Length: 390
Ligand SMILES: *Cc1c(COP(=O)(O)O)cnc(C)c1O
Image (cartoon, rainbow, N blue to C red; front, side, top):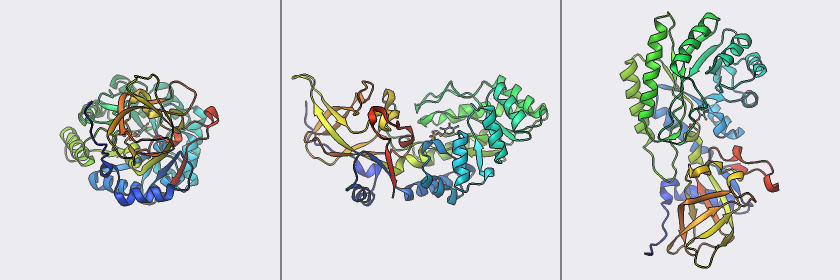
């Protein structure tokens, strides 16, 4: 094999100053842990507002529900999309007014709808007759938006199939909501998380246009389209810039709806918080399975159960940085638990310097989203992932 010097494109994921900040903060702390730089969350929010001045932002709380992140976004003026009554309670506790919260999960217990309504929530997502009936009964007069089924082609972390319904179902639901005193407010979809194919928004928007027109023939005027999440974070394989997404999506909207387009909501999760997080981990062990085996196994003190569940099927490829030097070597990366599915990357070979060694710290970038809240409570006795803000 030809020898190539190990080089990591650090500047694509952090500045020298920011990395120094993380390292200094980390020194005396025991790994593994997540460090979230709140100023980066603020910067991402500002960038989103600058690029998409035509949208209303509802942060998808599930991406990272840390109080500090919610508070920063609250002060920026963000709205929030909640998945459960627990998230709703958290938002209210942190002083977010109920008018700024949507209950975006289409899978809801009847008593949870009643609870949310009692707390002042008046905006609900739905995609089925069963759920709609629960909303009619427990949240009278509320605004509802209807979630369309989309393909998740092009997404690194697809959300297809489980959510949304075909336009023929949605059409009936809109009429039924209207007849039963709800306000059919708009439509929503989610093209899949870390969606690389911007054209997917175009496909979904044309379904929206069709439904807007179909129900207007019945005298119902929808007012809003919720474009969901799917906006990119900076993982190993590059995606288009946010600016390109913003520009293209606006073009799709104007093609379908003209300049006087409906109110547009987005529900960014990953793209707002992922780049702000760094996980600091330590190498527990490096070993070989057979004398002549080509690859070393590198076992980290964090794995699938410690917060890196999005490595399932190697969907999300985090940038992982070693400060050692030397020629490149391909390795297999695995987590610390006694579960054989706790392998991070085996098909896709990560490269590290040959001098990589046990007890060395590695830095996993772009880990601010879908990590800490996904980590298990005590699998193998391991505590959930610690998280700090700086
Ligand atoms: C998870 C989720 C989001 C956030 O998606 P990202 O791709 O992380 O931005 C937005 N809307 C809904 C309804 C979701 O379930």
